[in-house]
Length: 161
Image 1: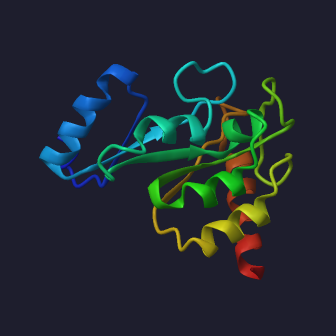
Image 2 (image 1 turned 45 degrees about the vertical axis):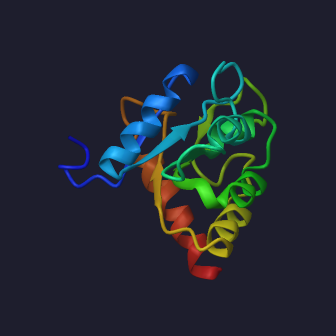
């Protein structure tokens, strides 16, 4: 279905025992699958490194969906992780968090502890051409203002890089 719909990447969190099946399907349908990291407390893929370790010897169409907020909450620099795993980076979740700890909460991009200019410079440095999606979880019932602020901040940073 995803291939027929024109999707280029499927985001998922497959259990380890399903990675062989995922590999078979990406080969059969010639579509990428990006594994999403979910930060501290996630038993499967808390960081990009943990996901990469499970996929590094699999088909190159299996890569990473880098959630930079969860990465920061896990105590890892999102820019360093992005550069290290650039060859398998197929999707980015743009967000910011209020503290670099497991209890960190989503906040407007630019107001938190992630060095967003550094992260954007890293994406430019690696010539990233994949999807960057804003994931704004702070105000689920009325996200428009916070999302607009986040998009505006990123546009402003990009304008001066």
